Image 1 (cartoon, rainbow, N blue to C red):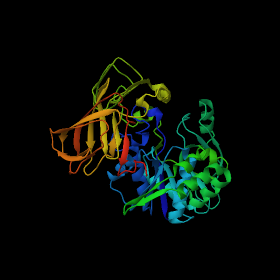
Image 2 (cartoon, one colour):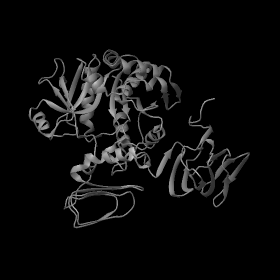
Image 3 (tube, rainbow, N blue to C red):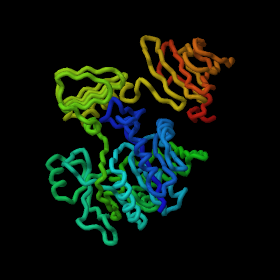
Length: 483
């Protein structure tokens, strides 16, 4: 039985700020072993029986990061597909467009396994067994969810209520009775005690046509725009995979609603596979902390830190040494441009900091100091009144867009590698310790023709230094306007 895993890469992961940002979301967060949550999900998906293709639903802005994460890994799938959302429209629309693409490519009875990109599963064998049970039921038209047998009364998870006995003809699949949103603690205790409620893992298995039929019935304001966005999409393909860039106008009109609200809570075809597979949705710094072994005083350290008279703290550094003295029950997370200090029992409230930053239009809710682009990265080293300094790293063979700035001039100094530079009417090559000056209004482009990363320092001067002061004329990554 062929299964097409679909990995949904949405959500900013606001409770994992300052590591998770809008332009660098939670699935890209690296764990202590060096792999990201997205990479772990991709490996898990590629090991599903008879899988030859994995499909991602992600944003246009994070497409290249997602693709790079896959390139880093060895895998056994021959095709990797990407559906690019022009804006977020929640999980119903994301899964709807994925179902339509799978239906087009593999037929209406193709089995889809939908997985969030930001979950951790420790028991891969149990996961594969659960998928086999789910797929066997899904091929007969059911919408199958995955329910985790609860180990404690959690208020951060939704719950699935199910019938006591498995559906006739199946070994473990149960009929779903109802869904319960994230409950208060006293309600969670009752749900765990009765033995007929499971944590909602947010994973699904169904035929493409089964999902589309129910979406058309219960959420036509998602169904119609989703199909139209796929029909009008821009498409490209290669030997390794394909890209479907959804039509923005059609997709924007889709209702912003989750798949649970849109379909799962309304359909009579929903079933659940009870699972025990070491599942965690890594929803807060508390759950990240639990992945690191504690010392004798209950402290967990990821990175470089020195502790004195400290108990039950989680400390994560991003290269800088952190000293912690005489405190208890804290979360400390350090990045290049932001520091989080929170009480351990208030880990869920980190999202309120992000809300305040967003309301104030502070860049720290959206970007890190090091920003990823399709061609490489840039890091803001220093900025002040009318100047900004960046370190720019360009991948071998990559090129920035042919562009122009109205309000700033730039001085580029090569420190490593070789640069090919278009500067006005000239095209020049620069070696380390050579530079060029680009006046405001000049068309320019930076290319790395070499086989090692190109590193240069950029000094900007001008009355306005915002990233939106850019006019693109040509771009190999599709970011320039179409004439």
